[in-house]
Image (tube, rainbow, N blue to C red; front, side, top):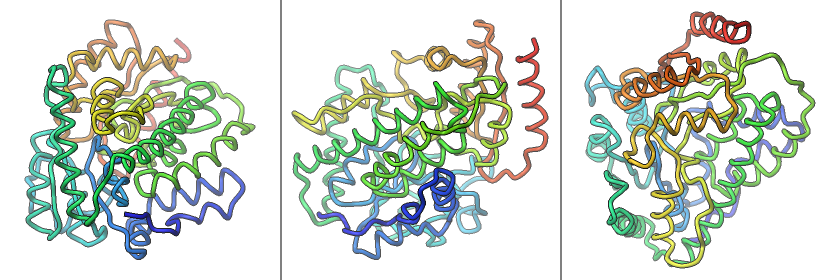
Length: 392
């Protein structure tokens, strides 16, 4: 299926300064009417919404669909609240609210059983909307010799469902084209994060977050053009290094912290690496474009990927991966967070803090909620934490 011809996000192209481009991107990210999704549909395009953490967006793109990253929203779950219990994370309710309130109109929805609460999301979603809702079952045992063939078949099953929605047949060459586009996107995001690690005074944590997350709202070719434009502008920045500690932020793999929280952290710390929206950066290397594309995507998920509390892989103990992230980013400390009521995230904090204590790496433990609006206490605590490290 051909992609809609017109771009859905062009406001930034009227500007030449980094500040103005970032302002346009931030405005789009905070717009809960999701104008890019509406613009895509207005051109006759179909939309596949997918929940956190990782989804092989190449499958949707190859079919001419817009892969739309559903990450919750800072809004009241008036319709969705009655469909879930009280003691659950916010992102489940607000994600469903986007559908029930018709803020987002989809043609297909895909979720994942990443936790006990999320495993019910697709069923609840499907009972309340008339389009197809699927569950992508990523391997529970990533170390099994059968994991790759299993995942290939699971991708094939999902691809068959996508073909039914679009009425098109997806050829291997369509998938290879999609992989090429997404390889470029991953390469550009690696360059963005390289700036964060080497010259973090040129790119604040909230700016990097905006530039990364917007990729889940627009077609990847558009995101690639945006990143190609802003990366040279960032590198040419004239900001000077300040006396701030270098930290790794851990805990943004699913529910996302408010942008104001990231701005608060950025006032006292350089965030030189993080797991924010890690699903958009899950594959850490280029996926081969020769051979079977579904097998290549499956192998990349298993053997060339990041880590998160919701993937179980004995080769990637989370605390060891965190220590490696801190070491590779030359960080002084870690900020260990979790969304409220997030069982996987809160459980992993125990292993993280134990490992950090053993290595005598300073850390700051906190939790957040996407709807939080008060940051004064957090700011005081962060300022104290940073000063203790700087003047120790």
